[in-house]
Amino acid sequence: MAGVVAALLFGAAAALRAEPLVNPLTADDDTVKLGRKAWIASGCMACHGNNARGAVGPDLTDDEWLRAYSDEMVFNTIKRGRSGTAMSGFGDTLSDTQIWQLITWLQDENRKRKAGAK
Image: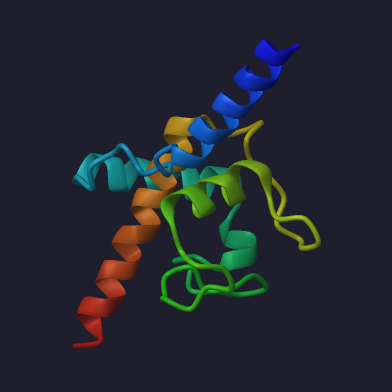
């Protein structure tokens, strides 16, 4: 029994030290294009608009997020959805790679928006 408790405590401690999930893809043109394709194919524009600047759902290209922005938070929201909101998960229709591509496209749109504001 002590061994089981020790293993559980070790596992919990390791989980606390785990590195956050970060986008493994580079923001090259091909990845950005594939992310835009995933955006269109999954129907995200129905709620967030053609260029993710908001419609029924919030603008995803600005820096105003209800929760602190991180790659992990955005990945999990796209994959699993957000309970208590209209945001459903897309983990059944998009692969993890497609979700990362979509996030890369969103980050590119954010950079373009910031560059245009200067």
